[in-house]
Image (cartoon, rainbow, N blue to C red; front, side):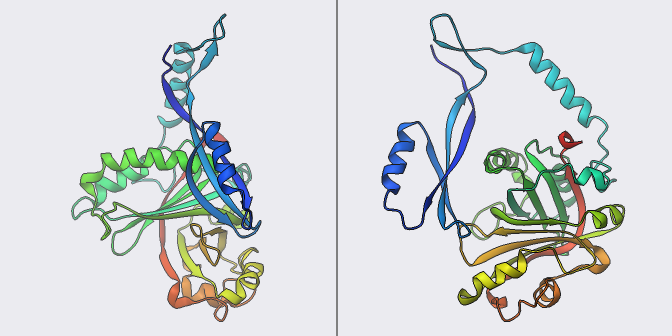
Length: 319
């Protein structure tokens, strides 16, 4: 009997950099039905990280003969739909409010520590700014902890998604592609033909300042994303400096993550009080317990975004 395949199962495995058993490991995983999605590296553990997926049947049970069959569970689906509907019916218009939720210091502490950060930039066409803004801010993200969004003077939008797992990141990529197809007519493509400029990486350090998050929750905030290239001889020294809470009294949170699959480049994401915003220059000089100016390569680094936060989406399942 044919099963209707729906969602996917995901898993990640690690092998040391110096292992000689990669082919054996891949054959073993393939024999179990796993398909390789991507390979990254974790310099902290000295391992390659392999991300796998395989199809999973939706609501598969066994009959008396042990044969799998699919159950639709219409009553349960109806209850779930009504629950989701009630959660979002009262959500304010994103062009009026700065957030889909009113939160406090205690709410922030309910969030799990993010495991993956994804950063995406979009360029809407002339005359499509407001329409795209509304489409972007009105989206729901079931597997995202929070998504911080804003736009710069060039009217490019940036979205920083904090995710609870690699599974959530992979799910978001799949959902994001379908959503991009729906807004393709609103976007300018980048020189490489892509509709976005994006990157992601596993989180190395997450440093929220709960008192400041509560203190400035109703004030204007600034979001900064910097891709930082470290000098080869100072990678360990830089990590000792950056993997600590921000030195800025106006900082609300700092998130440090690996840039793609590199060993010498990281992503800095910082949320600050708007008046105390820290750009790339200030970050290298005074954003940490020690200056980074002689330990990194500014000309090979990049300030990806540094401007006012315009909207933040918090996942209501944590409230």
